Amino acid sequence: MEPQFILAVAAGGAIGSVARYVVGVMSGRLLGIASPWGTLFINVTGSFLIGLFVGLFATKWDLSQTARIFLTVGICGGYTTFSTFSLDAFTLIERGQSMASFAYMLASVALSVGALVAAIHLVRALP
Image 1 (spheres, rainbow, N blue to C red):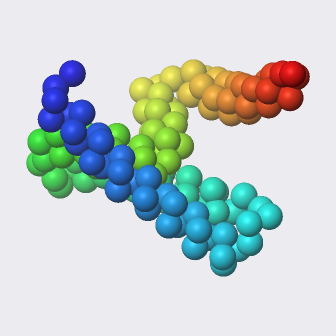
Image 2 (tube, helix red, strand yellow):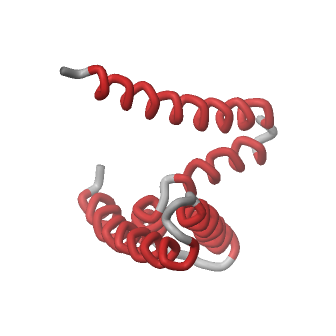
């Protein structure tokens, strides 16, 4: 764990988290807060952004590892971890592991929602 990587994640994460908050508030005002469309918008734009960064790293940009971590883990991760989920699923497909990618996607969604439901039931059961 390099100190500059930790600082890059922290700085990018702050930017990404603030961006998520601002986009979430603006989406709520435009689309209403009764639906999850703001979260969907954040997940889709975050996935697009990490894809853009990774594509540029591979073809156009010669950035340091610290800068790459700042943009992907920091900004994109602070904005939405769904972008990392999307990149992981795509990477498995690119490696020819389509079944593993499908299993990863299914397990991620099902287990994450299941964990949330379990936690809510646990808290409701507390005295």
